[in-house]
Length: 113
Image 1 (cartoon, helix red, strand yellow):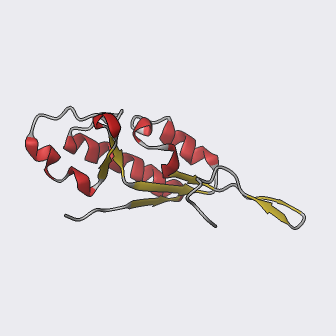
Image 2: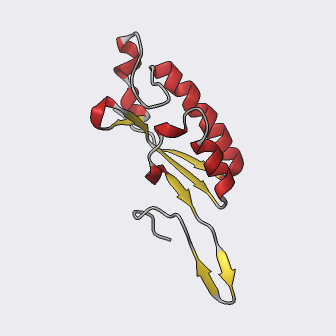
């Protein structure tokens, strides 16, 4: 069985990606909290292509959301399916340049620059 990691980058990529997850979740019977509420075994047949199954029977998108500003990430998080993502799915790098010093913020611990 194949597994797909969905990469969303920038404002456009994240806006399109957010809509993608709404549609694919509906097709697989996944609600905005990540719980399965479908009505057909076919919906679960290939669910592992796009989702990891977490504890409690929740499904989490196999996705990485990347942006250089917090606005787009905040709108995805507050959107209809924003709760379906883990905090580690969001890679947000805010560059703060003062003199010769560059700092990054809100980068998951598994992410190295």
